[in-house]
Image (cartoon, rainbow, N blue to C red):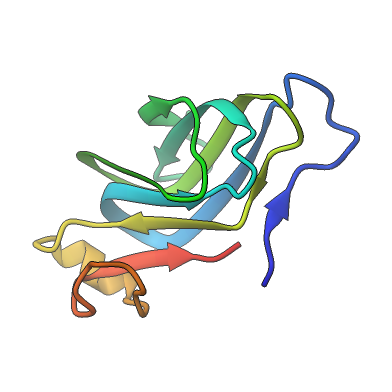
Length: 130
């Protein structure tokens, strides 16, 4: 498979980010991240609706690891950024997914993708494999 990793030109504390454009505004209330080598020590999940807006924080976290999942209060955004603020080595992400509330009409417009986790296959979701 593919994955995202930071260039070796980036030096400690390895501040870097990866961004997703969902194509339209979507309510999101959960994320799942696969960081195979557990290198990140501090990060922000951020969102905004227009490229000229400042980023807003959905939440701040510490380590991720292979099976990181977190629910948070629903927020609506088109652009999403996983912003690594500190890591002990070059960050690398194998998969990053965003999930929306099952009751969100706007979320259904974002599409669905197959699921290998415990969520029912009919649950509206957006995901991206990096």
